[in-house]
Amino acid sequence: MAAGKKVVTRVPTGGQPVSDGISFDTTCQQTSRWTFSSGNAGKRKDMGDSSTPGTCTPTFDRTFSYSYDKSSKAIQIKYQGIVEPDQGRIISISDTSLNIMFEDKTDPTEFHSETYTFKRIPQ
Image (tube, rainbow, N blue to C red; front, top):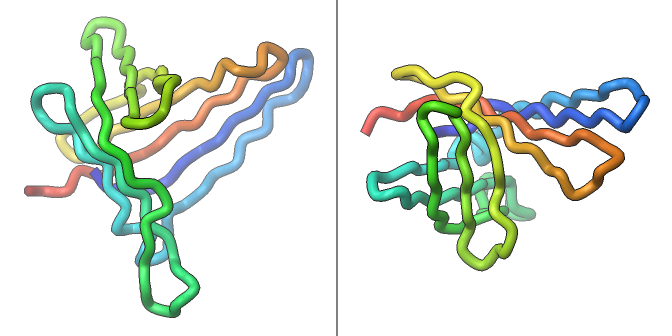
């Protein structure tokens, strides 16, 4: 799956929501991939522009295991080398796209989520 965009939403307790949309527009960013394989294994490789023009560099490169509950649409992703798993929910899924929202619950005074929109890449 290729990442198309990310929306970060923050809502402080009693405050107004703030959402920031982040598009993956550069050629390097568009080569970022999340692969969900059979057997609940996968790999995430985020790419970004390097200091050398025209060259891409990995900004995040980890394998992961995941569990998905189809009835509740809950997903948990456990990255290799990272203690806390990401907890999320599948917002929508089709033959061509996938939307996943992850919640960060580390700050009890603020709701924080990151929603990713992916495009399926034919194999």
